[in-house]
Image (cartoon, rainbow, N blue to C red; front, side, top):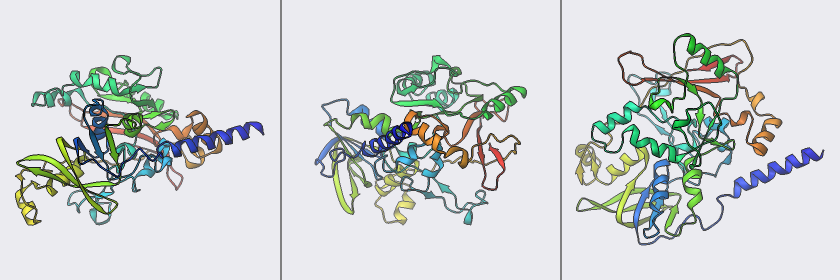
Length: 409
């Protein structure tokens, strides 16, 4: 009985600690300075990194504006297994595409749903937690095409600086590090990952660390995820929470930027709406847009930067006639089911048990710490002469409501 009482008190303490971690009243501002050196629009991953780094200089002032809320409004989404449940919530912009001619045949009116994070942490609040750096060839190609400083060898030190690898083995140690703001763990919990790897080897694929191997992704790898202590390690936890006490950094939530004020082709401030009130603030040095692929393009066009014909049609004065948003590309995703006979898949009955809740809240372990049942990843080239993989497999073990075990690719 004493053990269960102690466990109960431990869970209550963990929940209350989680609930109150962001609740101190001084952390988010509603009264603003007239101007700041830097105004950062958007509290996603890149915006939070910039807020962290820029505010290291005590001689500059930084304002971060986020349209959403604090990342801890729904702590249930910190549970890795609950990752899919965070979509279509208040933490999601719930963007929808226009009807498609050649895609989304299974969707109503051929309209696709495009999840994007809304809140401090951005899409790290609701993504599948996968920690995938990308291919060396992509970084080197960007550098070769004029993106100075973006080669793989130049970017790797920043990956190492940001990472806190929580595992002791199973990864390429030369390409990982400890002590950074973003925790990385292996979320594999069932025996299916081993089955996938054996099958991959049988047909000639390499099994390795897709974030190591000198940046060459090709092959199968374990399911590395942004998980620390059993919880989702979103960008707000890693880059913002530790520095909220800095006096030169102001963070405002529920502050939706609607326009960048531009004078003589220079951004001089922004306009935003907070709790139904329109406000404005000036920037002495820079306005930095980090609203995501959709949000940043929208703000630019509302500010008069975009395709002339489109802006004129909407009655927006043209500041610069530029093809904003014209090169946006989405990637396709499809599911393949494979039936298995052995009952090793994840099920709600297997995951959401009292013992797993105890493991999660007391020790940060158990099936709830799996990133949505993702068992492994694979990166494949469909043509031998391609320099980079063009297909990514996400191998998942789960169970549909009608009772068939399956893995999705």
